[in-house]
Image 1: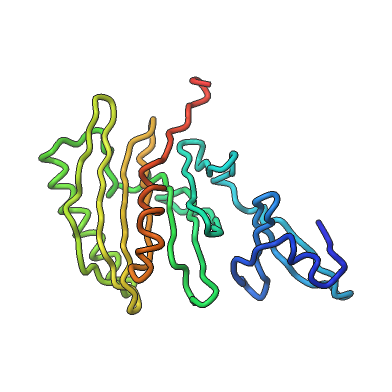
Image 2: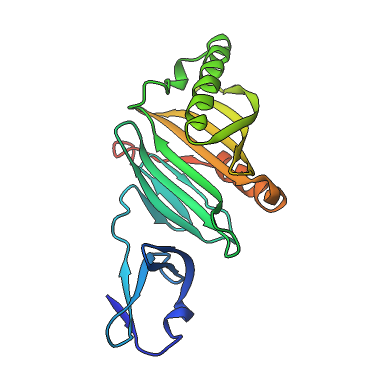
Amino acid sequence: MREWNKEGEAEEHLKFLRSEDGVDVYLEIQSGEEIYLVRNDDQQLEIEPNTEIKNSRMNGSRMEVLELVSIQLPSPWWWSGDDIEDMKTKGAIFRVFAKEKEFDIAYIVVADVTGNPQQLDISSLDEGSAKDYDLYLHKEAKKALSGRGMEIIEWRPSQLDETENFKRLVTTYIVKDEGRERQNIALRIRVRQSNLVIMGCFDIEMKDQLAAPIFDAIRSFVILPSDAEV
């Protein structure tokens, strides 16, 4: 645990991210570590690292997720990371918050969805089956988002990009979420034995600042070598 005894001394080393359960969450600028900030009885600042994040880690300027892929989170924004863990999905979500906004303005998700029967092995698709799968994805997304009070207002047909040794399925759509229009782009790939989704989302009202960086971050993912390849 680190302590700064002088008022304002801690804030020189930290970047505010969000408030969570009455505790302020900051990014320590030097280490890139997400930390919790509270005050003890002596009004000293106590810093507790967020040790709960297990699915991602920083390596240089890139975030490695599940030891499968790495991504470059766009600057100049400060990103807040959390694990995703449930029966069907495992991975990480990285969010950007603006001080004047109640909700995040953008996020990037990297998730292993192999346990979800709705998510196919993209390497098995061809042009015809990709069109059928796109119709299925649209129907399932519409149903899932509707249950959360959201509406798909634009869906573009998924595109299957194929090279000699690799396939990826790209889906873009716009969602209306509590009055906000949000652009989504989902990239589906197969990495070793895992079905991965790399997804970005941003507020359309900030597209001039966010569109290019979010799209570039998704397209510039890197597949990490397996232990056997190192």
